[in-house]
Length: 288
Image: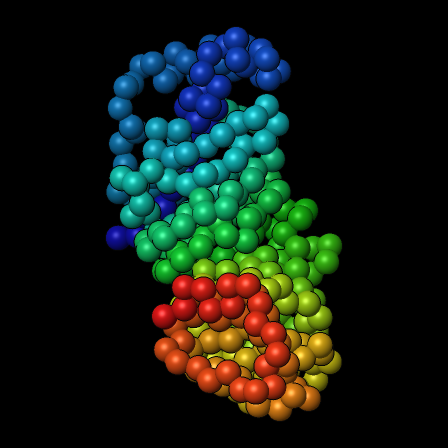
């Protein structure tokens, strides 16, 4: 049975802030602290897990790693005993209040259970490494009221500059995306770069162990695939490869291997032709 979870707001904020004196320093009303304290002190155990509610696990300070700095709530991940959760819902409120929410780098690193994540309207930052090697992740959704991000085709994209900041196994890059930074450590197996893309970061496809096929739309003026399962930019730099890549042997196509181009890939062997004059840092780091 699939498990889902939600933050338990009253316990979460109190656990983060500790005592009412800390709350005063952070301008949190004393009334909310006193009511929350009495509620949390009535039970010393983690809340029971219902069989099939709207969200089946409470995501509070007892089972997760959170940080409150007086302005933002930062989500640092799940404790080990709750690592088997499959469906994650990031909430809108803590203790009845709305706070900006940040998802930290490596927050859900190496989690093999999470299948879906829904981000609330108050999520302000999603680090590109937040779901590094979350091998079962296949669904990404953002609340339609979020002013910074939106979701499409299981991709998370910024509204202002069309930057794809997070993808997963089932992602299909929309045809209006301009920048790609967010497949780092994803479980994607094949990818097509649409004609609209003008920028791909050097780590965009790093640590994509399962990536086997890369294609670029023939109308893309910034990148090409050379029929070799690689991404080469207009400066003749190979910016990303995969397990089946073949480095082009034509100096008119490629002369450089970019940093992280094959980092974390499952490529087993590769030939470096004479036309390659430069190899960047960590180009083959952690490749198998």
